[in-house]
Length: 464
Image (cartoon, rainbow, N blue to C red; front, top):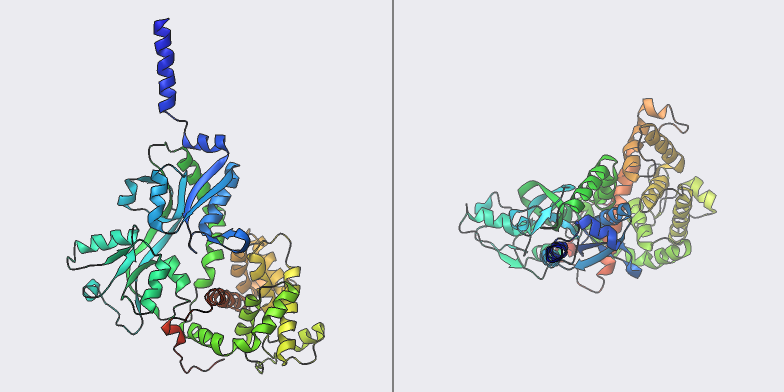
């Protein structure tokens, strides 16, 4: 009996000291606990607590795949992510983390799902450095606890005079603002973050590429086995194969791929000088037709640069550049009248949105409606057919944007009902509006605060 009791006791002790595999814990509890950070490259919280962001989309899809509830813990800075993991308060970290030796001491990394480039950022007009030698006597500030610190530490082994300041109370966006304001000379930003923020600070530039193809991955607790990590790897690899990763990347970064420095400076200038005359009408049109007024304003800027008397070589007129046929369809007599044009454009856009297939989710639905506003809904239908022929997803804008330009090639337009179209134009059109819309959201969210000095600088550039 004593031997049996010892065996039972040993079994109990063994059970207590060896918790079940992490994946089993997640499935048994019915929830996946994730730590991430509040950032456009990870997760943002909109009105009514609505969440979005590339990392959020990925972990929500993973939780759905596991059949469990997603429980999110958000932190303000990347330096706060690993402590949450070490304390055992999260099953994984999805925060745009680079894989570094220093972090590997505390967590295990899964399969890389993206890569970024690491840039040294400076302000135009302050002297572009050609090498690290040119930055040794100038100020550098970076976010504490990031791979950017590790990069500087490795460079310091070669350049002993290299110095910098680490700040745990800011994010990269804050430091980019400081560079734009001339408060510091340089900071370091990953390409995804910089591609978003440069639209707000048009004078920021890449001084040097410090690293190309830096992998990003989810992090998992150490000493908990690799069951959850392995399941996550399988999930992410499959998302890469079926195109989901590409669609998520396009959803949040596609608008930033094309950047027009002069155009962005003009846009910010016109936001101050031209938009106030028409803003109330855009707001009223947005309320009437259930569309964000800032999206309508972005359409208006793309069409006319907010000029009520604008006329194109093809005869379209007004702020929203309505064709004569469209104006007649909408019952508008005077296309040049600003109110008529904005209300008509809003109604026409709303009707395009209604025509998009119910199977198309946001924001792809918006991008397709914008393409239809530009090139015509029937050409969008033709492009969707081409996507289907190619084995893609007709409901995904990333696939449709690749098919639209094919409407200018005989072997494709000869096979579709509505024939030839300059299909590259609606793709550029949508990308431009996405950029303007994103800048407008940022500008309106920061109303009442002074614009960065570089944004207030005017330049004599002819509007087109």
